[in-house]
Length: 277
Ligand code: A2P
Image 1 (cartoon, protein in one colour):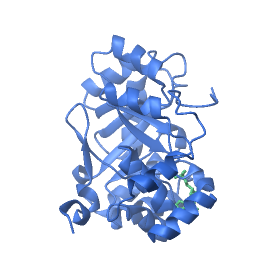
Image 2 (cartoon, protein in one colour; image 1 turned 60 degrees about the vertical axis):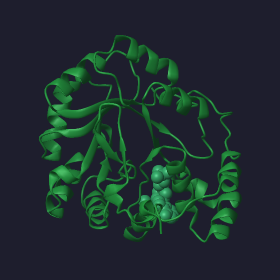
Image 3 (cartoon, protein in one colour; image 1 turned 180 degrees about the vertical axis):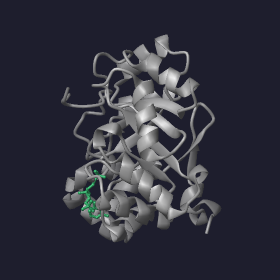
Image 4 (cartoon, helix red, strand yellow; image 1 turned 90 degrees about the vertical axis):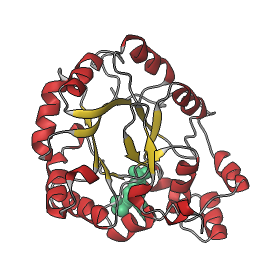
């Protein structure tokens, strides 16, 4: 087998524009309630070799993420932790301090503005201060389209290095991905399984059967091959494990094209079809 096929999960990394490294696959914990369910999911992920956990102030489960991290015994410096500034609040610095307390850590690896509420640049100065204070090693945004990225970059001292966006073959935001790459912004795919609904798609199921993989693995592998960082969510140990097994096979150009054709955004440069704020 070629070298990349045998690399463990923690060695599947991408270097961000600020020089920091991020594991390509992480566990997303959106919609997992604070308490035992989050603690178990994160603990299982860490046991199974995940070294990247993605939470947010809005999820209300940072405390459980922190507890699982501590209980896992995995050294802090081996785990990449992302949280997100809830833009309904005023100050990213104050909210970062609260996140760090809840998580029980001295810094997060990545701190994102969760969505551009109040305008794309409104909170960026505070994000830079959180970075300056060492609360976040890297800073970025989420749910930003290309125009909004440009607005931040025009006024930034520290440029965003990540844009986390809903992304899958069904939401193949090709212009957004190309625009972000041109600006040295890495795109992270959230809801890569369409919060579960893409798993039942007939094309995905047929392709998965053909390549001898599961629908989830095919959708996640598509993300990896499209140069995305990907953060599937699951509360089941067997699924968390299944989702981690995406670095030991490859989709052919024809498989990728078949999945690309599922896009129903028209290859948009927009981050979202409907805003919730
Ligand atoms: P559960 O948490 O009960 O395991 P997304 O990452 O797009 O948000 O999708 C998450 C949804 O997909 C959750 O409902 C999760 O259910 C489900 N899911 C995650 N991984 C798998 C898998 N390997 N097989 C089937 N369903 C999965």
